[in-house]
Figure 1 (cartoon, rainbow, N blue to C red):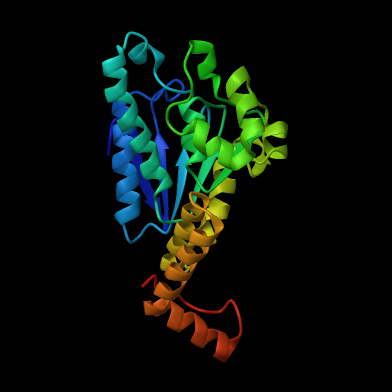
Figure 2 (cartoon, one colour):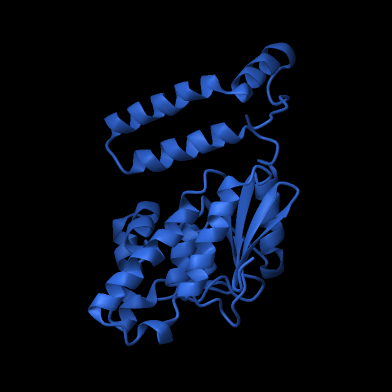
Length: 259
């Protein structure tokens, strides 16, 4: 367990919990601990789905500006790469992931939420990429993952203006997938994650690899990638179990082992 980030596992769901009051500002120690927690969530066989959660008050208010303010160009070059890589480690978790977003998800906080497969937000959240107001731009995925999610025109508006988005606009443009009462955010994330606990883990990983990998290439190469990961699943126990169960008992009744 880290000082600011830890992984809590309960009934197949791993929660990567940020805990750096008051707003979980992302400094170098936090993002390194985040990377460790994401790797642990990836490697642990008892983790079938992952929630990223900052607690009831704030998801993450952005990078620690006090730590960044006096960086030289050379120092910023050393800082930025590992920060982006730490968040990418969350995006690379080969299991269903959901960000449970409360309070603020700004700057690096929104970039972290963008690393998850799904985002569930409280109806009082404020989301944004306000880096432009500091004379910089998002540097840990905000220009790339945001534009892939909501389109380049909307992403440019959000990045150029640095404005805050409320939950209704975020839902309308697809930046978040579900909006609930603030006190229900984590429970809603648990409900979503629970449906994957007894599912075919290798198939989830394959689906994620095909979808995310396909977004980074053209359609032809994306289809080739899909074929590769599809055929690879015929070497798993879950494929045999799932198809035999379908033939014998109908759909949706297989008991998977994740192998």
